[in-house]
Figure 1 (cartoon, rainbow, N blue to C red):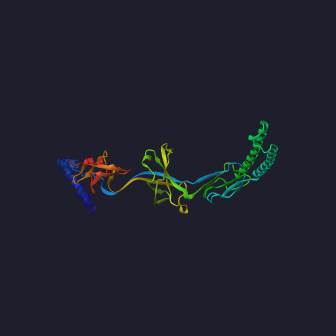
Figure 2: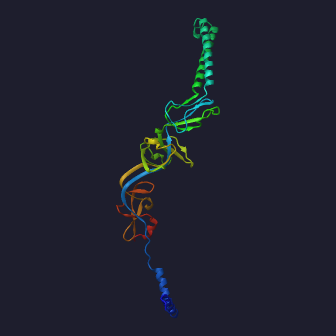
Figure 3: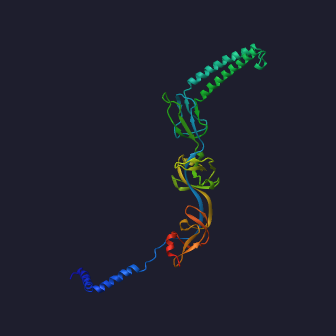
Length: 357
């Protein structure tokens, strides 16, 4: 007989014996089913955490972005044709540098006309003063003389004001920056007959004035104060954590994109070497409210009603009352009731099924 046929033959012999001894077969089947149902199964393994001493940090997690604290938006106060544009987006400028100018020919002509009108009015003023013995309106001999002297002064003042306005208009045709920094916006980079000043805007930002602004929900703002440490991780530099401090908290709230109320909390950034930080960069941060070293702590998920946990023993789990202190998003400080290396059930519901009686 072939080798592979031997096991098959043995199975057939066994089935034949069971068929011929049905009574015994039934008893054996009943015993097998009962053993399967009533045989004690091993207790399921329940995840635990060993109690240890470690640094405990209580914080508020926030998100925000880089903003420029020294930024100016520059526009021409008058309309006109752009005669000169001296910068483009990304250029570095210094305080007082001219960014653009409007065609000044009309402004110059208007100023010259005003100066001529002033000169004529000055001659008229001096002549009338001479005709009236250089008296002031208060020294006039009668009401007629008083009105003549007052009108003479009004006309001169009007001529002076016209010159000043035309001079101001000429100056307003030149757009210059009061701060140094980087041009972050330039609505146009070309001058010419089709380039109109109007609403053309140039924006300059001082890169040394950058800060990190984050929104803190109104429910948490009462916990935040100036001087608290802030740990910042930028999306662009995930391997680096900046440690700075809160320097300003807005007094007025604003509405966030999801409809809640929040306050802006400002944190300055370090020296911006090589423009490492740029406006609009996003980051996540933790505002450190409290920090302790060598603290016993357990996971919040293991605590029931803020007063007890289930501790693992050789026979199962026992209910243990504890006293907790500080809490953060994941853990709680244990002030009393546990010791180092105690094993605490992470899921109290499962632990209840293995309580020591």
